[in-house]
Amino acid sequence: MKNLLTACCVLAVGLMMTVCVTPVHADSSGLTGLLTSRLGVSNAQAEGGAGSILGYAKQKLSADDFSKVTDAMPETESLIKAAPKTEGGGGLAGKLGGASSLLGGSEKTSSLAGMAGLSDSFSSLGLNADMIGQFTPIILEYAKSKGGDAVMSILKGALP
Image (tube, rainbow, N blue to C red; front, side, top):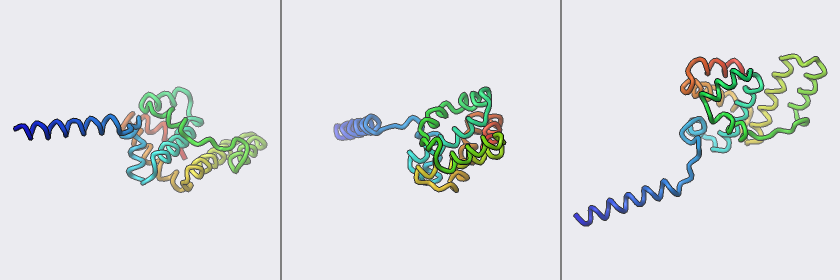
């Protein structure tokens, strides 16, 4: 009986040590967890990639629609902050953005600049642009699980 009690105490202390010492990421069971488990990317790549895509969507959405997304997915803003900062005026994104201004800011040119910015972000994370197409359906699935069809549709309309 004494050995059983000792074993239970050791197990309990070990469990408490694991919980207390293991760093817990705020989103480990959420979107970041889905992306890392399904795509085999690192936590930093999952956060940065999701943040880049959600940041792209934020630029395309009205404030009201974006608040519906953030209400359903509160981690959205922190993921956007985790997105890599791309060169403002340099790179393909900057050149396309400049072309957009010269051409009167057409939506198609603006969309191309946004896609180039996404591609730059993914590249700085060590991911190729094809990964954007792998991240997007997982983000939409997660949005649906958190906010239903309405939130998923809002995001789907803003994403490439």
